[in-house]
Structure formats: C-alpha cells, structure tokens
Length: 379
Image 1 (cartoon, rainbow, N blue to C red):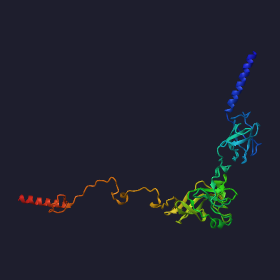
Image 2 (tube, rainbow, N blue to C red; image 1 turned 60 degrees about the vertical axis):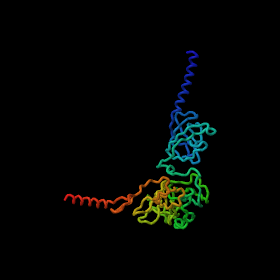
Image 3 (cartoon, helix red, strand yellow; image 1 turned 120 degrees about the vertical axis):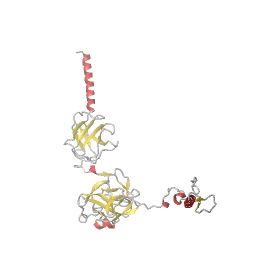
Image 4 (tube, rainbow, N blue to C red; image 1 turned 180 degrees about the horizontal axis):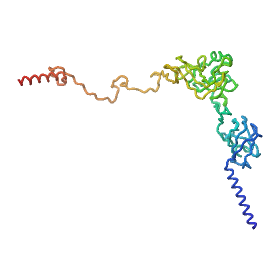
C-alpha cells in the first residue's frame, strides 16, 4: 500500500467520522437526571453526546423538583450551562417542574455568552405529584386594585376592568368579615373572580403583580370570609357559592352574608355564583368557570341577563320609522299605493244616479218580480 492509499484511507475515515457524528446528532439522546443533581444544578449522563455544539439535543427525565430561581444542566461533564425558556430570548427558565417530568433540551452557543440549554416543554400537569399544573395565574401586571385590599383575598372584576376585594377589613371576626365590611361596589355578573395568593397589601390603583393573581387555586377562605375555623366549617366535596343581588343591567352587589353551600328552595331574589368545591372545613378549590344560579318559576336554574329596561328614547341609534309603521297612514310615503274608489251602494230601485251600484238585495227583488211576471204570462 502506497502513501497515497494511506492518505485516501485517512480522508475516508475522517469523512466517515464526521458523517456518523452528524447522523448521531440528528437522533435525540434520552437519559435521566442523576442522583448528584440538586434543584438548581442538574447533571446527567447521556450516550452519544461528546461535545456541545449548536443543535445538540437531549431528552431528560427529571428526578428532582426544579428551582424557581433557575437551574443549570451539565451533560456528560461537558460543563454546567444555564437553562433558558424557549419562549423568551433573555429569560432564565424558572418554571417549577416536578419529579418524573420529561423535558427536551437543545444547546445554543449564541443566545447568551458561554452558551446555554434551551428547554422546550409543555406545562406540567401531573395530577399526582404537582399542583402547579392545575393552577392558572396572571402572567403580567394587567390588573389594578379598585380599592385597598389585603392579603389572601378573593377579588372581583369591576366594570372598568379593575379588581375589588370581596371585603376591605383586616378583622378576623367571622361576622365582620362576611357582613359588616364587605365591599359595596357593583360588579359585572359573569366577570373574573381572582385570588390574591400573596401576603402583600395593595392600595387603591396599585398594579397587582404577575404570578400572584390566580383564577384557579386551592385556597384557604380564612381572609376572604373569616379567619376562624370554628365559625367557618365547609362540607368537603360540596360546592361553594357567593351570594349577590341582581342590580339590573348585568350588575350585581354582594349580599350579607355573601357565601353559602346551599342553593335556595324558594324565590329569594338572590343570585348564587358558583366559586368552586370545598376541599376541607376551611379550604376550597377555586374553579375557572363561575355559572350563576337563581330560583325562578318554581325551581333553581341558570341565571341569564334578561333585565332589559331601556326605552326607545334611551337608544341613540334607533331607526327613523315612517308614520305608516305606527299610525297606518300613508301620507308620509313618497310612493303611495293606488287604492280603487269604493262605489256607493244603492239599496233601492228608485235612484237614477249612474255612479251607484245596485245592492244584491235589490237584485233579488228584481229577480222575484221577473219570476212573478213569467208565472202570470204562462197562465
């Protein structure tokens, strides 16, 4: 074998190595986060990954709860790299993933200095090991407090889009929290009902921060209703309703007291907004949907806004109607129908008016006379 043959073999071997490595990278390697990992630093051994290059892809089964402060990933001791959210260029991934959650990681050397892993995943919804997947929260500070509100309160959407707390008291007395200090604002029936999960208090017109306002949440009703377990005893597994009055035009106002677990068995003029299901004596799972019930026509049924009370004068775009629509007169029409003149009926045999029409009654008289004359002639 000549030196030329050796050179050709070397080139072929090099090309084959590059080709095989390129093919290998088209395959997603699968592994599991190992026992040396922590919530902030994942380590894993994955077959087929010997270098970190743009597009290197691994799928890992997680064995640890991730940290809300962000975490790093080190594959095959190639270096711990920060994990970034695939949906935001400059955002470290701080979503909390629970044990046994599977995530896809793609290496990117250009997003941040020193390189990073980009995490592609759906939202965690493991019903057995994680509650966060079943909680829906605001993602930005889009809501504003209508009134001063305190920690751990339910908030209701106002007509201007702001949120009002169900009460404005700091008292822990059961009666006070449920009755005396309730908010007296009207609110749109069918609007959002949101739970503030933070310890912070907010002044009127304060922006309510992202990540603290939940539309579905397992919460303690202590501050929204009262803070006494003895006074507040819910039946677990039964629905919880918020009671309000129908103020007309699709608006409601909280009643006193403003919660119950029982729908009425007779008409009481109240509306019952479904909040969720009790999960304990003082806890409840706030649900996303809040149908409204009312006792009407001998039974409880779904409420609908049928309180239309507007008059014609209150409607600014009411169309102009021709007089004929309300009076029957054709005088205001530009194209009037031709109505034939009704002739005068003559109910006698003495008139000589050529414009009158002989009545059927007089026609019978003439017919009888003709019959009599024929009978006389035939005699």
